[in-house]
Every structure is written in C-alpha cells, then in structure tokens.
Amino acid sequence: MNKINFLIIMIFSTFSVFAQTEIKGKITVKGSPAESVHVINLVTEKAAVSDANGEFKMMVSEDDLLVFSAVHLLYTRKSISAKEIKAGRFEVKMEEKVNQLDEVVVSDKADLDAKSLGIINYTPKKLTPAERKLYTATSGSGIVPLDPIINWITGRTKMLKKEIEVEKRERYLKRINAYYDDAFFIENLKIPELYVEGFKYYVIEDVNLTQALQAKNKIRCTFLLGELAQDFITYLNEHEK
Image 1 (cartoon, rainbow, N blue to C red):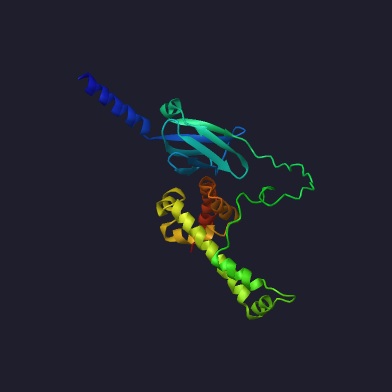
Image 2: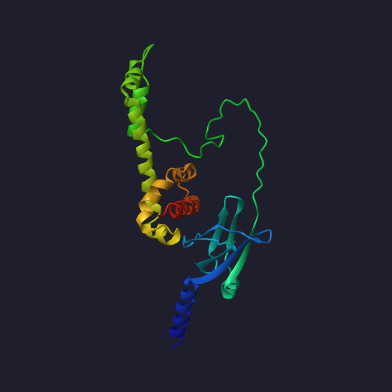
C-alpha cells in the first residue's frame, strides 16, 4: 500500500510540474505602462504582446523563462516563480535603450576581415548554382574579358542576378516554414488565415529578419515577426473597403 501511495504522489507531483497556468503580466518603464512589448516563453515558444496598459496573458509553468523585447527597450529576461503563479500575476520593469556611439579605433592590422570586425557573424559559404553562373558571367580572362561585355549587352547578367534573389527568397521561406506552422501566424500573430502566405512573402523583404534567418536565430526571428505582424495588420485595416 505504501508503494502505491508513493507512486500516486509521484505521478501527481510530476503532473503539477508540467501543468500550465494562465498568468497575467504587467510591463512598466519608469512606472508607466509599456505597450507593444513582445514576450516569448522560451520553454513553450508561445508569444504575446503587451496592450496599452502594459498587460498581457500567457500560459506558464514554474521556472519557465520569459524574454521581453521592444525596439526602444533593453532586452529583459525573467524566470517565473511558484509564488507568482499562485498570485496569478507579476510585474516586469524594463529600461529604455540609450543610443551611444562606441569609440572607433583605427588599426593598421592587415589580418582584419569582415568576420573579425563583426560585420558578419558567419563564415562565408560556397556559391550557389545561380551565384556560380553570375560569377562566370561577370568575370573572364585576358586583357579585355569578353564574357562580361556580351552578357551585359544581352541582359543575361541582370537575369542571373534576379535568379540569385529568387534562390534567397526560397531559402528564407523554407526556413520560416521549418520554424513555424500556420497556426503560429494565425493564433499568435493574429494574421488572418487568408493572408498567411502573403505575410510570409512580406516579411522576407525585411533586412533585419533575413539577417536573423541567415544566423538561424529563431528567438530574434520570432520577435521581429511580432513587430512586422503589427505593421502588416495595420496595413490591412487601413486598406479595407
């Protein structure tokens, strides 16, 4: 009997650990409500956006880690405690960003490259088929290479550049589809189902998002998608007949 009771206690204890509870959060900056702050639960990958009162609701468990981000505010993290779950609410105080230029030091080091300077955060990869075609079309040998001239006259170079852009867009879309299903766009970002595919094509034109996709930074992608979704929905509302 003791063993059975022990097993029952263990089962209910395990269940309580993983149980999700809806909790209300409030975000403030210098005592004032912070609107349009993006909140992500890193454990469940669920997202929310604070309203005009700085408030939002989210399903959480004890020790879930939430991250808070907005263009004008410093990135903030918070772990949910059992006490906050019991209270059903909690408050997060965020700080404004202070834009300050770092000192620029000029060096004569010859071994500096784009990656060491922080311009890119990845090792340049091999050329794609379209990029190889473009390289061939725009380079040549001899004193006066003829291939670039002929291709420029015939318009082939322009066509190959377009082909590279198409390749890039296909890669971005493929990664977005791998990260998120349609339910994420409809339920979390509130994109009308009819416009989900159009929204995907809309966001891959954003430079910041494509950089995050290239870096495979899903958390940043999620934040940026939240911001782009607001702009997209505003655009739809303004153009409704």
